[in-house]
Amino acid sequence: MRAPQDIVIAPLITEKTTNLMADNKYTFIVARDANKIEIKHAIEKLFNVKVLKVNTLPDRGKLRRMGRFQGRQPDRKKAIVTLAPGQKIPVFEGLE
Image (cartoon, one colour):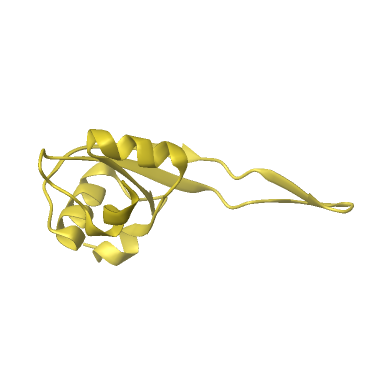
C-alpha cells in the first residue's frame, strides 16, 4: 500500500472549487494511477475526516506554444471528495 502523500499531490483551489466547498466537496490533484478507494483512504488518513464519496476525472494536458515550438502540459487527475456533514478540511478553512 502506498503512502497517502504519494496519492494526494495538492489541493486544487479555483473559483469553481471554492463554490463546491459550500456543498462540503473538496478538490485535489491526485496520482494518475490512483483509484477511488486509495484516494478515500489517503484523504481520511491525511486530514482525519470521514469521506462519503469520491469522483475522479482525468485532465488532459493542453497544447502550448513557445514561438515556433509546440509542447504539451502534463496530464493529471482530479478528485472531488465529498465529506460527511459537519466535517471540514483545515487546508481550505480560510477560503470559504
